[in-house]
Image (cartoon, rainbow, N blue to C red; front, side, top):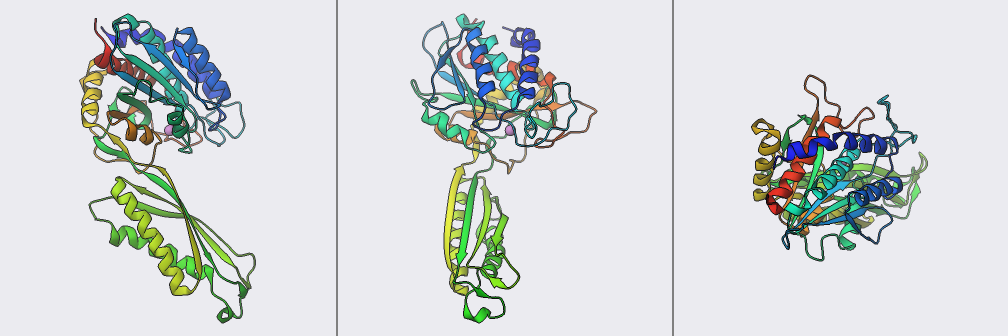
Length: 393
Ligand code: NI
């Protein structure tokens, strides 16, 4: 079956869905209109909906008519970002201060087109395809609720796949790194405390501001001295809060930041060392301290065999030149990692949205847009991957 040809007629519909979603962007957990549109379109394709215990998000279930077989989950994210759009597009955001600046409108439209295309050939499929449209990827908070709603269960998912538009790749290109592909992300707040006092009489108290300053420099020693040079880790202090006046030593100083790694072993080590640094620096300067460490997501890890499947599928529907070999993981993060932790046969791939001859505008920029010409390639790769796992002519 030529799935590129099979998907082509859905281009117009996918383009319309994307523009409609782009016009009505919704931030994480507020994707009410988008949820409604997705539910209506899945129903129109004859796809059953499974109820979730969340307010937004959709799970469509398509059973192949060739009998039992594996369960393949395809996932898209639906949320937009809290920023003002400056694209000047005819279908630009109509909601001030909210825009689709990461291409989730494109991911949602691609998966809707895929659902329609696969529903039309369900007599050739065995097993089950689940279409998972999740909320709140940008805050890394949406996947957890989907998993708790059982989207990976009954029967358990065998495979899970998602795509992300990349302005670093040309239209019609795909890439996926084997093994760790995106970083873990965790958050921390360290609070140093003391009695407080007069700026002119520091010897009468302890100084949480000075302590915080030492802590900020000390944490960089974790990356440079405590992590193997061949491993990767980032610790960034991104917010500091302390004090109200030029002559009052405050009672507390807060330091907030994020930690990124490419393995759970390094991730655990970073957390441990961060706690030691806080304790050590606090003891040295005589302050109290508290560490609030919030684990968010592990690294995204691509299964090698699934990357091989991507290459085979892309060769088939996009041609031999479509495959770009990835060389480096990204230190950005994705809550897709939570699914891939539960379903080891997982694949998160990038698909090109850059028109050749144009300058790339990357995600989270106010002039960013997905590309309509990436919709058919994305849906064709999704369909071919499902066909290779569940299909037979
Ligand atoms: Ni994104």
